[in-house]
Image 1 (cartoon, rainbow, N blue to C red):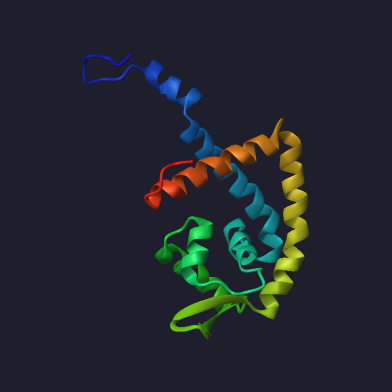
Image 2: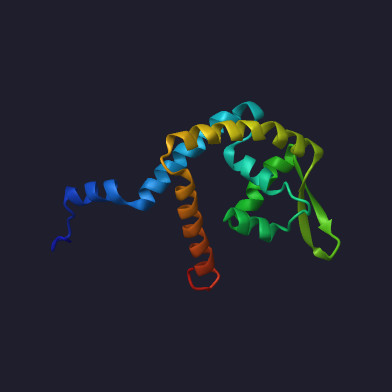
Length: 160
C-alpha cells in the first residue's frame, strides 16, 4: 500500500530488499563476477573477458553485431571490451571476405591457448557454485527465459 504523502515508510525499503528480483539478481551477479574474477586472476583475465573469449571459440568468426547480441552488449561497450584482448594478442579483427565493410573477430593461437587453460578453472568454479544451489538447472532455465523474452521485446517481437 502506497502512502499518501511524499515519503515512503522504511517498511517499503525492507519489502523491496526482501522481494525484489532485480536487486537479488544484481547482488548475485556481482557475487558471481567477484568469484570468477578471483578464479581467473592467475590467467590474467576477468570473468567478462573469459565470456568474450569463449564466445569467439567457434568454427566461423562472427561479426561484431552478432557477438554483441550474444553477449547482450551494445556495440560500443563490446568494442571497448575487445581492445585490451586485442592489445594482448588474444583476438584479432580480420576482413570479412563476403562483405569488405564488415569485420570479423577471431581468437588468435594465444587466445585459444589461454582459453583452453582457463576452461578447467571455469568448470571447477562453476561446479562449486552449482553445488550450493538447490535447483541450478531451474535457475538457468528461468534466467534464459527472462533474457530471451527481453531480447524479443527489444527487437519488437512479443515476449515468448
